[in-house]
Length: 227
Picture: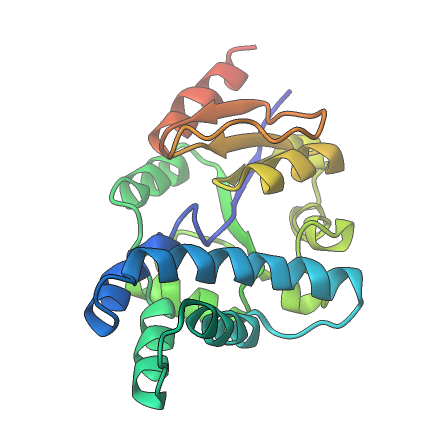
């Protein structure tokens, strides 16, 4: 099996969605961690509900809806200034510290690199720019093109269509186990960046590789080249 291109999920994989807890803690002392966790869970839940109901809405708007709900659920008084600050921070989430060097190494090795994300194009470009990742990716693939969120097959199909490659020759990298598992069902070679040592989802399928950080992707692609 030859891996010719690598596509990365953005949120949670390249960019730390829970880094928002620092600003959350500043705005709502004692509630930063709870807000970050509930906000993320509700954000993903809304993408699934909207895909199942064919009621697409851009990810930026879903992210804002999830923030408003989470604050209501936690009893936090979200005024417009706080909402603007939190959404602004989400547009430039911190990248995980090892990511830039790993991406540069993969690019040096000749892999075509892309992002495949629920994020709408403006969100992705903003995050990439804030992380100084300009010029690394050949494409920033947004589900906004197909108006369906992952794990819809139409979303996963964007990378094979873009690269002109079978899915099995593309490595799909995600920190979300559900995403990596469903990408495996679709036909990708997959790698799960399991940063928090979480259990495998009970879906009857597993990613082809697993590690604790993006650094482990380097060893995985080396092993595939040698088989």
